[in-house]
Image 1 (cartoon, rainbow, N blue to C red):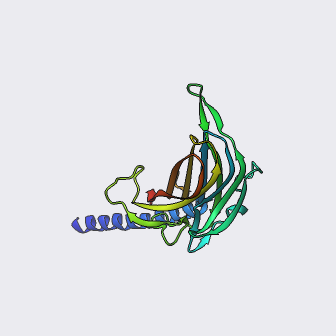
Image 2 (image 1 turned 90 degrees about the vertical axis):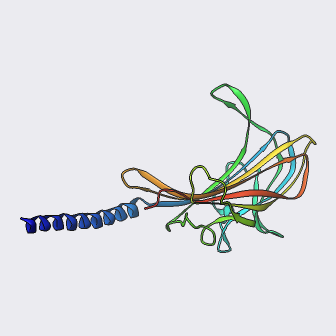
Length: 236
């Protein structure tokens, strides 16, 4: 009787192991069929006054000293008044954005019909066939450059939850004429994400952003603080 019990337990254990191996294989097959990886790069510029003769040099997504050719990836093709190019600067290769004149944009907020300032938005998305290393993107994936004084922040708990947070400084160049009380905000966002379907859509990602607020006319470089979050989402 005891021998039969041991055999039954052994068969259950073997069946559980085989089932686990089969399920892992099935998950990988499903992942491979539904997997999608992409990089999203967004720039927002908001102004409450007219800006003239605008030139901006902005940090660019770079990996292993290679950059995304933003100009060739449909970067805000809606408005031909914006001119884009890549330029070599004292802080490395950067994205140049120019326009002769930028006017404030307004939108009506639906929930209370309040008129608010609306940003000029520039956006591109780049798909890749390779799984993105969202846990450790530094040195292997596209990140915004330049980065100075990069340090890991071990005291702040990021939200949404992420594996690590890094703080750093970067540079932006702005040149334009405007009124002395003009307020301008420039923000940059980069996200690398893997998405797949296994019993529902899941994802993991890393992302970083930086924002600067400027007053009056500008004619030079400004230091801007950035933050990078890695290891966000589901890993299996």
